[in-house]
Image 1 (cartoon, one colour):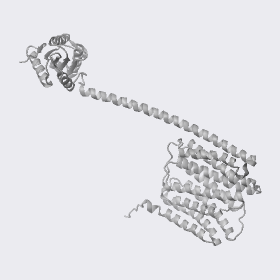
Image 2 (cartoon, one colour):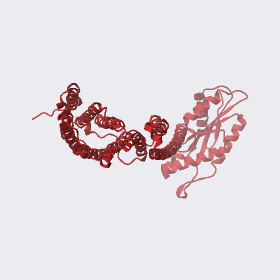
Image 3 (cartoon, helix red, strand yellow):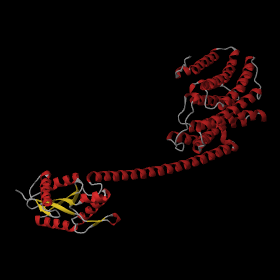
Image 4 (tube, one colour):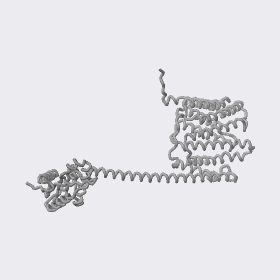
Length: 513
């Protein structure tokens, strides 16, 4: 059987770095060589991008090949235009303007735009108006710069209609590319290396274009031609490396909370809005002397202001939504805390109370008994009664345990109705109960036993109209000195045994030896 070789990321990215290194060597050769043949190197690099994209798509298998196919289709006429331009340079002849090369360049920019729009839809997912507004503000801001430094100088030139239209078409297509690039950057969260290389291609391309056409429009000659040429070659290399990089197979994640307006982004947007007034105040290129230019810049500034107002409205709406979410979360948290407190209260109650009757259990009785007995004195006596039902076993045997449980609940109800609210009634066994009373004399404790015995004179009516009669035997202990809970319970239990053996349905008091 053959072995499957899994390449590490560094091995998979080797073609991208090798391609970038080879392209860098070509650019260095262009810079250090004075031969006219060096002008063909730009065509070599742009043509290599088509093959780099084909290899990268085949090798890395991106989620969708359509954007990359459109970019490769755009690089093909771009390479053809570079070839035409290079051949004229080799022969030291003037490049026709406008000519076939210009049509090819502009056609390639249209294909670039289509590819980037397709990529933007896949990367950013659904339409986000906040990101589109930010991209629009950036585009209009640079549109003011483009008008002041490129388009307006071209309009003041002596170019005829067709050359003028082609000259203006270049900065216009650059602005279209800029708008798509801005949308990609602003609506994408986690960015892959391939994505960053692709953005780098756009940025370098637009900077090189701006430098070339800006100097050409203002001086009539592209004084930065070599610098722009290097920029164009570098941008092509970045696009080829982006396709060859293994991360092209990953999908860049859409940015979360795109409605937010970070301080850095706000500063950039405000700076672009102030660009127009600064250009007018500085009278760049004598722009104030031409009402058309002032009108265009004021119109762009008004559009920028409108987009910023809309952006602030989106930000306010976003803030309201987040505030509502915060209030909802606070409400849910408060409800959760209340539920937790209620649950804690229930758990605490269950830990200290009998689940059937709701009376205190033995643990709570011992706790309260310890506290009360520690304060016993001749002036503060504590009474403890132990109760055991007479005939309860017969009820369980004849009517069943559910009837016995119902009887215990009814007994608990009668006991609590015969004592004070501050007295503790506890169930400490199957049919055994206890009563802890504080601050009562021995004579008052006799009254307690009488009331309790009287409460058992009436029969108990259970479900299905079963009427049963049970009584209780009581063992009582009046405590006037500090005593341990175990001793008090033992003494009361001793008195209860005496009451049982004496014939039941009666109370017996513990007498100290």
